[in-house]
Structure formats: structure tokens, C-alpha cells
Image (cartoon, rainbow, N blue to C red; front, top):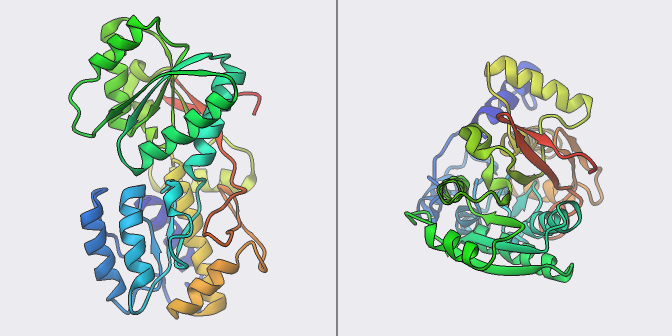
Length: 332
């Protein structure tokens, strides 16, 4: 997110900035914690120089901070590139996101498991937070609707040291055709290690919080994940972005969080040019994008907000880890 935002700001300022003034970033780290996110949000709403917020990264922090941004004496617009909890939809008029919600991710993963993998029996391990619960519920609901059977739904925390009991119990129940990991990256890595130690090779699925798992070596080979963006997707705009990112950060490739952040910065630059820097005017202009104003065409696709601050037309694709990279599954 930080790298992509810095790249976008450099591009905007190289073209003269916004209304002849340079755009500036203030980088804040909430460590993915709601308590820190609240403190940061309070600092930002109290700073008159801040005209918009890009973030937060995860759902728990976004839910906590979003209430501060929207309910402050001088509210400020927040656009998250990656917070996907359904609970974020419509929490207040100043909160938006440019990524699909867990409803889209879970349903797409369930359809993929049933129709493409022909999975009949699945197990679910989920992180017991806003993200994990939301993804689990949408996946389980759709998978059952399609006639599949969910053998177990097992919770974990970020501090959970072992998932061995869950793996053993699934083995004893006859195994599964696929294992759904509604977890973060660390939880998925832990599950994969437990499976390896147990000698089981269930097809593994997960949401976009698994981004980065492709760097885990052979352990992650074949893992499927739902994402709103992959670097190999078609389009000249995306190709130009990927090339610019590679020049700016040699050896690095953007993920969905970075690409969406890049889009949000460019979107906000157009909003500021048209509406000026007043917070209320910025919010009102953002809310019109895709409604009575044209959608924003970004590297991640079309951004068009609905009246709940969501982008319901944003598509979700399934990617598979192949030799250290996530590539788009064919047939989508």
C-alpha cells in the first residue's frame, strides 16, 4: 500500500500536482489493531491539512477507525483498498472501500470449489475476527446452497500455536476434498505446515488475506486464493502500472492492496481537482463516482460506488500459486 501510494503521488506531482500544488502523503501504521487505528484516526481528523484517508488495511481496524472519521466534528472521507468485512457497508456516509466484500469472495470461492474442483466435502478454519467470520459465513452459505457438505468450522486466533487437533479430527472424519482457510497469511502458513506434518494433501483455498503466501516456497504450491486483482490481468493501464512499479521497486510485484491503493490515490487526485480540498466537498464528490458521475477506470478495473460506499460490480478472480507466483486460474 505504501509503495503504491508513493508511486502514484510521484506521478501526480510530476504532472504538476493538484491545482498546481503538490500532493503529500502522511504514512501511519496501525499494526492492524483497532485500538491503534482509533488513535490514528483521531490524530488525522484533528489535522486540518488532511483531506482524505486511504485505508485502513484490515477490516477490524477499518471498522474502528471508520466511525471516528465519520462521526468527528469535521469528518473526513476514508477509502479502504482492502477491508472486506460486510459490516463496513454503510456504517456512515464518509466510509468507502474500493475492493469487493467478503460476500463476493466467499461466494466465488464456494462456486469454484463446487464447480471447478468438484468438491463435495470441505473443512473450514477461520480467524475469529471480523474478516475471518465474514469470509467463513459467505463461503459456507454458498457452498451448502450448492449441495456441498461442510464437515467442520474451526476457529483460531492470531496467537493460536497449533492447528494439529483440527487436522487430526478432519483426518478421522474421512478427510475432505478441500480445506477453506478464512485466515490471514500466518494462519494459512500454520495450517499448511500442520497438513505437511500429518502427510495430508487437501486442496487449499483462501481469501485475499493470503496475499504473500506465494513467497512461502514449496509449502504454498497449488494454494488457491480469491483476489480482486492480479498482475497478469489484461489491459494497457495495468501493464503500464506493473512496469512502473517494477522500475520503482526492482524485483517487486504489486498485490491487490497496492494496486487498489494506487487507484484510490489517482481517484482522489481527480476529486480534489474537481471539488477542491474541503472535506465535505471531497466526500460528496467521491459518493457520486459511478452514480451521477462516470466510474473511475483504474488498474484494478472500474470503481463505481453504491449508496453504501461499496463497489458491487468489482469482480473476484481465483489465482493459484505456481512456482512462487499467483497466476489466474483458466476458465474465468
